[in-house]
Image (cartoon, rainbow, N blue to C red):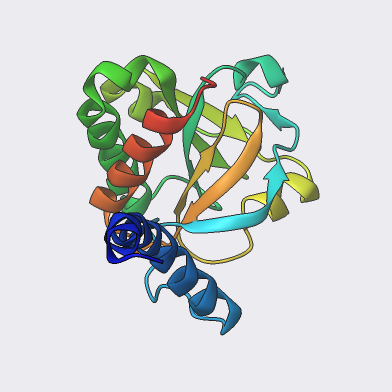
Length: 189
């Protein structure tokens, strides 16, 4: 082989090496079980997603799947009446909702309780776009972890799956970042 032929192939070999080196490094890291220390989401991903159980409205009428279809839902869930922590989450989810700006129409907010006939009047007086739901069955209470203390925020996708859960002390900015990412890449809702 002449030196001209070797010089002609060296840019090709360099280019090929530049393309294959990241793949080799990534494959090696994956093979040895390395994973990033911090995931990109702020909430806890429920794997597998939980199906949305049957819920009722404040008057006891069953809510249909259509009440959640086509929208992303931020659900503030907790046992008992809406206490101070619940009201803080209601306000925080409203702020997240407003901060979504152009994507606001794709998201709805719901307060979920296990009380048979909750008094939603005071909440609806200051937040008329808030929906009220009641977890009447044991399956509904289990799906939203109503047996644990504190109010949590859940994200329900447009297909009726509970996909994310946030701790009672979660940062609302994390919820906003997760919702922005979901709405940016989701084709549904």
